[in-house]
Length: 392
Ligand code: ATP
Ligand code: MG
Image 1: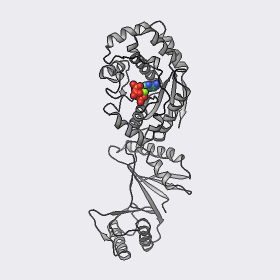
Image 2: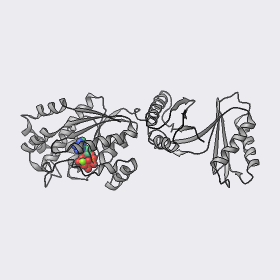
Image 3: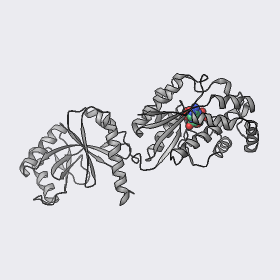
Image 4: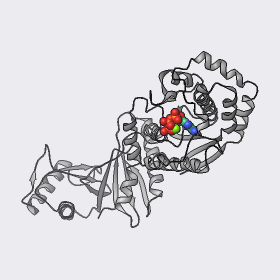
């Protein structure tokens, strides 16, 4: 019976000029989400509302599922709308609506009318009272409760008349694109896709970089990262994924630096390269899936050592999360199953048996000088052979 949805969004902080940016970005993201659904939809803005109107047959559950992935939406209200054909007709429509949506009518209700079209012959209060009366007459088992009704039936009088009473929760957050862009260091693990999701939820567009080390990491490991980016893109919109061939840099570090510092030094080069691409692509920050103490390379000392090579802010939204909490989000957003596929994401020859957990930044810097001869050229080649994959 529903052919349209009214989209609710939190309005706090989006007054004035920002409101347009917010709404336009939201409309853009809704269009992107619905492109993947069967059917044609018209998305319109009108007087502080966004409507999604189905122009063709569509799958209700599919549309709701896709709208629930659009950040910025706080609620999705399935709507029935009718032409204005007189008040009596409207009362009949509402009585019919209640019959369809609430087979069990042992409920309290409240009518909440809003007259957005001021030439309508009745004022809001009058509409409330008169429709309330019609409902009570049709269903004597129902009662009015203006404070805490089971059913809050909203009526909006515009060119057409809109009727709705259900609010399906949206994901909240801010529409992607309202908060600038950041570069996600995306590996095949559980954490980084979740980190990207969390920052995107605050309105930030996401690009990504993956460090690939063939033949030590397989094509399947790379495909897994592409697949993860694809899942994240359902929420964020298209992701520009940069695949950087890291093999020669990794081998060179392996050859020249102490093995217990390999991971830290590798991570420092990942950050440097990611920052370079970020700056060239107008990203305002980096994002990683790090969480304090999770592994040797994520102790406070290690984080300090990887952090110091970057000028851009590094966003680590999972910093205070336990693994189990990260897994819960990964399951919720649909990345978990892909993340746990067993394709290796780092060859064991590059993993020291006893990695440093308290790297000393001065010592790390000194050991990095062992790389002076060739590292610049290797980084340059890695950047030049950046493979860009547009996902989503
Ligand atoms: P994840 O589950 O995200 O892989 P992890 O627990 O395996 O995390 P690490 O391997 O220490 O943690 O990596 C920490 C962070 O560094 C990752 O969350 C990711 O942001 C980044 N990272 C690690 N390896 C890569 C890679 N090969 N390509 C891109 N980013 C990477
Ligand atoms: Mg990893």
